[in-house]
Amino acid sequence: MCIQLKIPLISRLQSNAALFQAPKAVRKRGRPSLYGMRLPSLSKLAKSKKGFLELTLKLYGKKRQVRVKRVDAIWKPAGQMIQILIVYYNNQKKPAFFFCTDLSLPVKDILSRVAARWSLENILKDLKEHLGWSHWQCRVEKAVSRSATLTCSAASLLTLWSLKQASQRQQELWDPLPWYTHKTSPSMKDMIEQLRARILDTTFYAINHQCKTIAEKERAICTLFRFAA
Image (cartoon, rainbow, N blue to C red):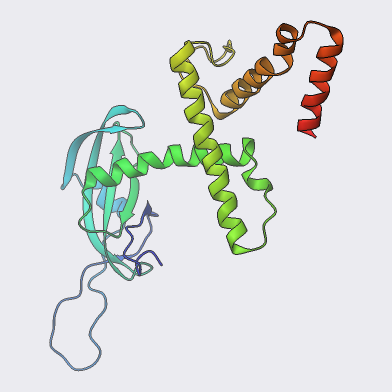
């Protein structure tokens, strides 16, 4: 579907994928060949030192040294010529294999998008665990699309609110944990707990300062419970 819509598709590739060269233009009778000669396996191509480039890229928030080899080949599931990247991260012994259906996309952009996938997987995990994305009960197409949009919007608003609070008050956004003292940013769970604490500060705890008598406090608390119900 992505290839038909001309949307670049980037993903991992197994080391035993069958790859072929482009077919040679040979005039002969019958149906023309769809594939050329088969290439060696990706594992063998990775062992050869020829064709590798040394790049310094900012991946996962840090500058990293990578060795990359690009191979253009035909892969039957794609049905067309694709570019394949053989990547060694930080002198790792085992390479990683990726493919991209867009032959014009630079190597740097492909690896940057592969690294950006980690943050996407984290936010999807948070949406399911903390913001109820997996609890929607939808059976029609519009409801399904709207549920995802609403959940993502809630996550965006929560993140923006947390950043605004941190820039204004410079307060501790989470309780420091003895086994994770180098934590530098709040998680989605930390943001939710921060919002809950602020709601309590502006509702229940504020009653002690706004209401002078016990009767006034009881009426205010009953009003809050009616809104909650």
